[in-house]
Image 1 (cartoon, rainbow, N blue to C red):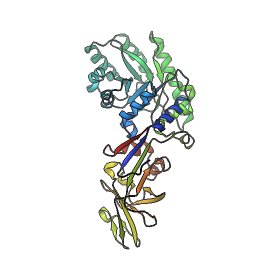
Image 2: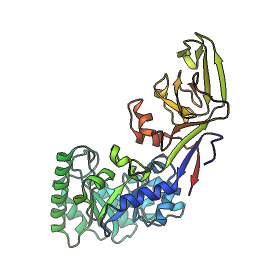
Image 3: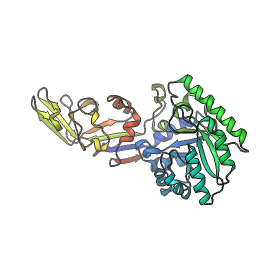
Image 4: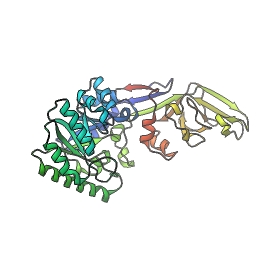
Length: 366
């Protein structure tokens, strides 16, 4: 790959293909694969990622908000799209753009039926969300009768699927098994009241890997597609698709007791050498990474971020690194793990990935 000449986020679609095929290999042939491409496909680019996954025959996409689904439709994506957190104000748009809402509360169910009837829909697909322990969104088990009655009293919508979300599928075996059991019970109760059987889906990436008995009709993979398996073992089987790189804009030589950056937050301990890099908190490098918590890599060596992170720049200590202006700087890639970078400030890889600003240039490799 060519060396970075500016701040860029490289997206490697061959790594995406590898991750998709690896996760698919865990499933039975008839199990459908839903790819989660919300939040700009976890900080990369939802349109390019969805287009590539469409060529790999992903069965479904999921986004968080209606606007994200509209962006995919505008880009020519024809695969079904589940909107995980729709709002009433967008229901007409959802129908106009053939998006499929998660219906997670009595209010959302009533309102979507009202809009679907106004729009003269027949059997419009919706996905009924149940809460089995995450306590975020979803109906309760004792809402099944209410939902069934609402569905029987309208021809405007149909329950395409029932689903729930695992709270701790990477590390809580007993709790997860209880969620799986509760979800199965809900499904049986629901089906006993209807004359059709909706699809069932429960598993996220860790669920796919750890709970094959809960794959049901479809699985939903997000972070795994982007190269992270929520465990050191599974990370070996996946390839991070994103590499964040920049360059050294300028090198400064400073004397003992000179200060670096806003609020003079760093004081040099002796004769030191610093490099200024064109990436800052407006690009996704949180201020928390400043003051020697975060770091970058230059010519294979670790360079701590010194002083406060600026809006468009960071300064790093390169006193013991042989480098020059214009040299490449790696924030994270396949060898320099985003997880290690994230853990330096006590956060997770998801937050670092999704924080990469849309002003950072994306470069795609096939």
